[in-house]
Length: 144
Image (cartoon, rainbow, N blue to C red; front, side, top):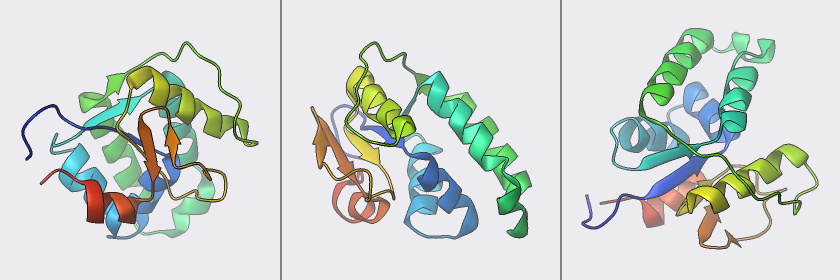
C-alpha cells in the first residue's frame, strides 16, 4: 500500500453488478481493494439505494448464486462505506441517475469514479475526480 492518504473511490452500480457475475477487474477491485480496505469507498444514500434496487432485479437471477452474493456484498459494503450527502446539483449527463455520481464525486472529493459506462461518461474528470474504467483503474491506478 502506498504511503499517504487512502484513495477515495466511487463504484458505479454497473461495476458492482459485474463483480458479482464474473471474476474480472470489477471483482478484484471490490474484493481485493474495497472490502480489504485498501481504498475508501464513497457512497451517497441515493447510490446505495440504486445498488439495492439494481442488484435485486429479476434479470440477474439467471446467474448462479447472484442473489446470495448480492445480499452478502451489500452487507459488506454497508459495514465499511463512508456516506456523503452531495450539496451541489450537476446536470452534465443525459441519464439523470448518472449525475448523482458526479455530485458524489464532487462532495467526497473522490480520487476515482470507476464505471463501465463509457457511453454516458464521456468526460475524463469531474473537478479532481478521474473517471475511468475498471481495467484502467486496475492496471494504472490501484494502490500498490
